[in-house]
Length: 120
Image (cartoon, rainbow, N blue to C red):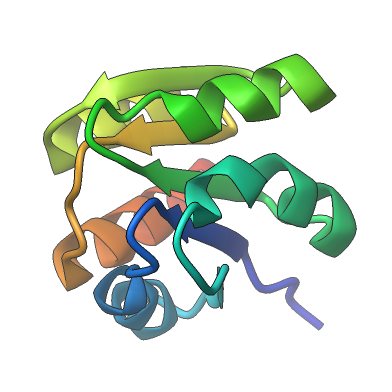
């Protein structure tokens, strides 16, 4: 059985549903953290779910990623504003990636496809 990629999604405003659609379209399992301030829980949920990578969204693109690094030591990249920057961060081996607000299906799909291609 092939292991499905688990992606945790935390958005400061409680969004992330479009990113989740993209993750699922690429064959991954999307775990959307509900509620306002969800970005601050990305590391916690990644630990609990044994997730492959996490996507954190807030105005600066950094708070949730930095919290995940501080609490759990995850390798992070943050402050990103494009899908291409996120793909580059995944290729560099980062596990938690922080973006400004970007609740798009394309982001979830392409990030998951890239992770699968990397074979991690």
